[in-house]
Length: 388
Ligand code: GLN
Image (cartoon, rainbow, N blue to C red; front, side, top):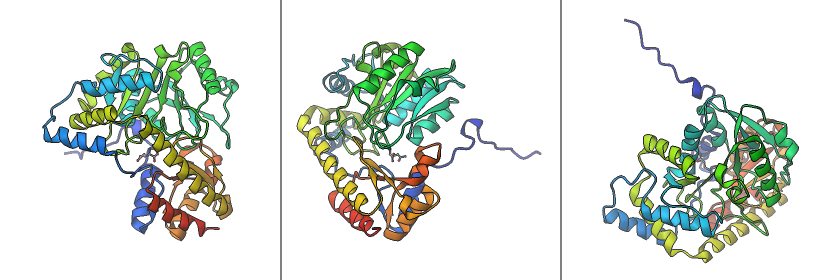
């Protein structure tokens, strides 16, 4: 009798638990304040909570259509037209998914083959990179340089090959906070069309943009609607990161295959939560979104000022709710060491910059998440100030 030889798949070879999650464990172990993982524990709007409680109480608990319940698809389509300026057919162009993470995983499975190359901007969100790896795709990195993360066409031409099939744009970006402006998007749109690429956008932080930055959806640029998957979700907008509700919007020829994979993997997103979010979206008006953005801008300014004074110069984000700070002054040789030193010395968790870069640049950076209630952020800032 031979023993069973259990081997893990080649697809996940070399992958380990993310530094984002690892730092949460370290933070809990040491009893710190967690500015590492983008948990976003701000209160959920009562409109969303109450409608969801009602949906549970009304027993709206059976499978939904694989692409989502009708009221939520209708709300997403209306939002896509009013906010993103991409008119959308709720019947054929929307797939409600398990978070925007689920939208991306389904898009990769539905639209890409093993060996396909996909362009990612660096710094990247590690889950994008690793999801591509699990799909057998090869990420090709376009490094953008701080502080303005400027992009030009030559950078894209330098990485494209005859195997390139897609490009991923995360705007506002995690972790850099870059908001891709119209000029950037025009460069990307021209590049996609000349090279016949699929564009996949992750716009999960779309409502969190600061100062005069404007969120623009790539799908609205001429010639891009037919080749773009627009992904977003409700985690950040309604502070419901654990509900796992997101969506992909794409032309029917693309939304169809994404929906097929979504059905196979998940059947559907949790039904009562879908009804709750749909009702919440219908009730909340523009002022909700504006107030949220203004609140995050105050938090951004607060933590940037503290980091500056502490000698950890921040790279001021234009959007999202993370800030990268230069930790060179702490004299550690890696970002992991610097991040652990900050946690051990003052009890604030961050994510090492190396989680977001292939090269050395990340080793002198750490990422702080400021999606925290005022008292918690205040306490974290007091602690960080002690590093001065
Ligand atoms: N998107 C969040 C972050 O970047 C959370 C991701 C996660 O928990 N894995 O921190």
